[in-house]
Image 1: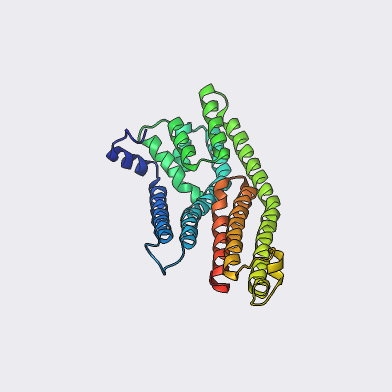
Image 2: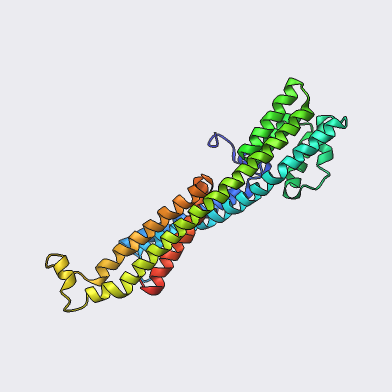
Length: 296
């Protein structure tokens, strides 16, 4: 669909849907990832030398993607969490306005003058769309698409169906507000219960890193020292150098950090999008540990 859309319409659609920041973040993320990926290829081919290994540039690809996009998603999730928390109050006020005799349109216009914290700009957008001639249904659907949470989408769908059926909208709004509040409480309880598992994953990842660091700093050098027969005997009489062993531990630590970050995000709230910030932290810590302690 986007291929057939003219550039002017594509840009206009991004501005109207409030996705300018998201579009910029995606461009910067993809651009930085492509640059570091090209540097990794050039380093692997020997075109550039002395500015880091190809593995370093691959790590920078991971860090640039998870860092830029991860921070953006983190702030978006925090914003949506606050909106979800305040949204039941907005629905409850709509119910009270309906009971006071206001139409649904006037109730929304009246609510837009109130203070709902971070939700206020979104309510004002709904009010503006209604005042410009859009139907309340279209304005509420656009609102749910901007926020994109199951709780709000479910509540908006319930409100729209109640309005179409011609029932007692005020009672439906009360039920919707109560339902949204209970869902939020359940999500907060689940997140609190899963926080301990995320902590366990972090502890396990850093214990693994500590063990690898101790092996690389003290055990491996002594086993590969000149004249030592222990490592040679373990390898069936062959010899191995420290420079050949360290990259194996280096790769293992990076892969373990990536996997642990992925699992931590899924445990946190069940979404893979939450994993990017954990992947960034773990991969960055492991990378810097090997660079600073061992100079790999």
